Image (cartoon, rainbow, N blue to C red; front, side, top):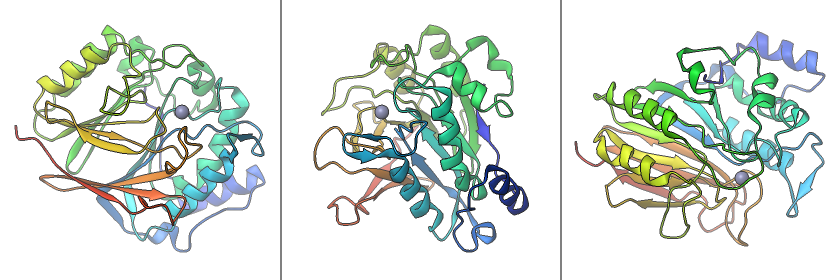
Length: 301
Ligand SMILES: [Zn+2]
């Protein structure tokens, strides 16, 4: 049941902005940009409240997301896709949170298709209600989870749904979803696979936020085409490599951080035949990790 917001034409975009009574916030030449089929953009942990003035941990989350969207929109080329990896809503996934989130993310739709996933501060039914046109029923309806598979030039992308209970920290994939994942990965042996999930597997800096993390890592490690796992949840930009050779990419939040001094922002990935580069785009341009590029080589099949 993928929530896939298709890219808008310039005409549709301006029409929607006019209907919503908001000024169309567009980078100059947004619709004329060339697309880099090897580039993807990742936003995570946006934590948007219904009221865009809401502040949490000294951060205005709507302002942060707006700044991220602006920086993303100013990039000289458009990506193949944008993934927003969960905790879209502030805390409880209220309908108003998604209405505001939808408005703030709308400018991105002028540039690229968007894939949305869910975290522990989302509420699945409210989310699906907020994006009805995109909640197309698919063959995955039986899972009742927000999962998706899509392909770019050099990789297959598998988006999971680790939301267990809204506003309860730990996540759970469940055996049905893990079985679905294994089947989908096995059916696509030719290209590198990257798995995207909100909750974090165990890393050197954090304990796992996912209750069935061992079962997930078994699926990832045992399929040689799986090269990387991208996640959020910890609000802490961090990249390392699992013992299996699968790279673990912890996205920064667009919203607040949990530890002083850590960066907020977004991540730009560029794929090659041999691996990928993940670049941190910090909101604070003076942050020492702003512009940091992690060069990852894919494990060999
Ligand atoms: Zn979060």
